[in-house]
Length: 307
Image (cartoon, rainbow, N blue to C red; front, top):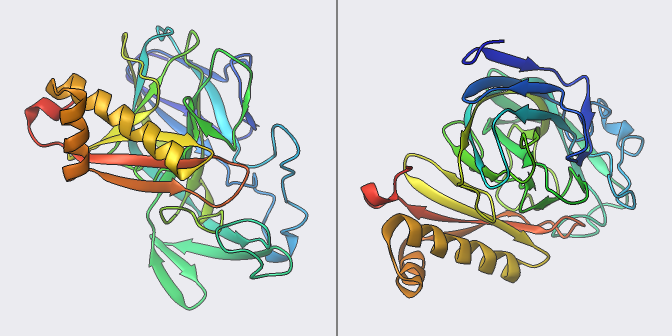
């Protein structure tokens, strides 16, 4: 297929790990547009609320069967040290999703004695939550490139991206991911029809979807952690076992980013983040997954715009 045409990748084959040794399901040149079909967090196994136990993943498995990712997609010309610049162009949602509350998962424990699921219809941009009607806020939970080390479960987040559950990964955002292996090996998955910052019970509205992306390669632009930008914001992501560790990593990343963009010294960049930046929690649900945070700084002038 020629450069510039829309490539399609279905969800008939998904992975529960981000792994450089996985054979690519698709190879594309850059820049190029993709339509990637994704499964919900339980790979379509949860269709009725009473099936919640039958579809449960086992986190004792190094690659628990949750948060499936479609891929990998090999991007020709992407080499270690480069970055993928991924524009989220659109998200088309399936017709239903689900949420789950567990006794031993989430910020609040023991509200239930056993897992309880709720199946919700999604109709014309609205989530039918019993008698409530909630506008959709589609976002992509898993966006990752392979590391040059061991495989990582798709349920986990890190310097490769992964299950960042970052509310800013939505239409209108450009995501920058580091390339660690030739071809990058891009994975996409875990869309939510809506998810609050923190994802406090461990699920948003988990749903299958079709994600429209534009992928490009930026030579020599890899950073240690993923970062994002919108027309108005620079966003630095990071994750770690605790909020304090994750926030420090994200703020340090933003200090470096502002130094590159504005020529600020580290103390001046730190002061600027403190003056106008916001530290937001992506995911912190007391689970086996690290705490994920982001730091957002407004683009104050032309010096902060994308190169």
